[in-house]
Image 1: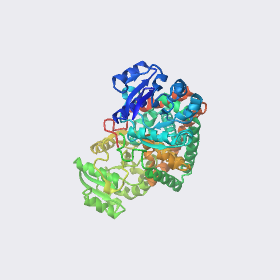
Image 2 (image 1 turned 45 degrees about the vertical axis):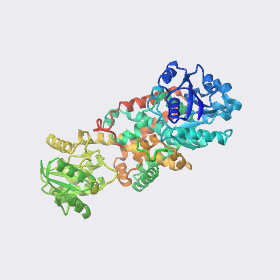
Image 3 (image 1 turned 90 degrees about the vertical axis):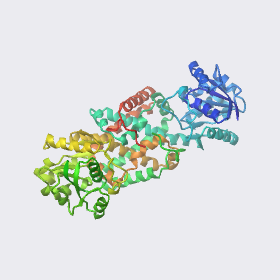
Image 4 (image 1 turned 60 degrees about the vertical axis):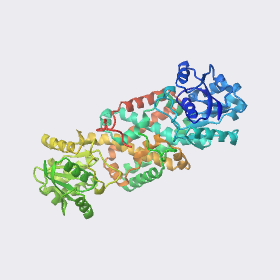
Length: 296
Length: 296
């Protein structure tokens, strides 16, 4: 049971976390800071938080658990603001979708208190952001990846695991570098590809006519192109090196397949499709959702 | 009302067409030829056809409408086999997903009777092929593209339109070259990309670990990688030039986006994502399915 949960940033991610912990009866009191006064006012109205804090430091003060739910770019400034106000045994977590840059910012901002941060990436989201869309079910059947630092203790990791499980997540741990590489491969690059595929399509004279006869395959393939520009600007900047590395690997694979097509090498094309199909068919499905119905 | 429908090839596509026309009360009698005796036996048992033909020619003979439901590679041989047995005013259609190669084969095979063929591409399918999976609803809320030849008459086109509407399709017409370009852009290239993305992933040492934390975005993006190798070998060989052209356009768009990432150009990345998002959001959805619930 958490006596006090402090939220620094009070949007969809932090609000849903608080709501889910409340639902689970795991928290007594929630205090939140947001640079937008409207946000914390709404959070109070919606019964998501118990008290508004005037500063990030105030939200951190006396909290057993502090959740940082701010854009990755604001991480360093927020951590600097709360560093000297953290209880010595408070558990501090973020929710950023890249970890290398968060950890670098944390080293700068937290210094010797770095051991209080356990970086976390709950793989959940919605198309609509903001506290008004906070949802106690947001983390259910989703995977949350913890990327412990050398300074984290097994007790901290266990405590974090129980919290994310309490909000409904399946929890796994990864090395931060491995996490960023994995995200580049299975999320960031697919987004980049979908963006580029849309660009290539609409920059053709007949692009609109072509899209008019596109079917369900195109619908699913291109769904992730409809993503938030500022969120994805930040992710691609944060995970730049890994994304570019994955893109190089992809382009090599694409060129190899193009070559087989160029040479009308039917056997090579068939083998290539079979290899891709087998890998996709063997995939057990989205992490944490193996047994859940697929999303609409 | 069709007095006799002749099927040359009797798998999922032709069987579903016959079944749907029957359901619609639009056909008196269905005769079918398949090189596999088991297939036509099953079609009889399932009540999809009324009579087995011993040859393709026999299925064509005395039929008002002949539907060619064979792999694109078999088109020429089948057309040669039926050419001299077509009733003079029979309407002949195929169901191939590429048109340039079908039309070329038809010119060779049909000669002066080329005007009897009205090339058609019903954009429908299932993961399971064969007559056992024939489904009267296969063409419902799907688009069927007719690609008339200069030798087709308006009356033929109208007749074909009514037939495909009778099985539930939304019918549109396109120039054959435009059709193949469109399919390369919105279907064939996305498949090639998905195949290559799977290859790039599984050829990495950590590929399996990466896939283990992939989420719903990856699920949808990569779904079309699980496609039939021989079907896609044939499609990519048939539409080779258009696919390679689309792939070049895509690679240019990808390299441009990579450059913005390489240069950490946040404004350019944000603008690029916004452009892709706007195009995807403005897309009305799969042709023919605008009002239908999305597939699982």
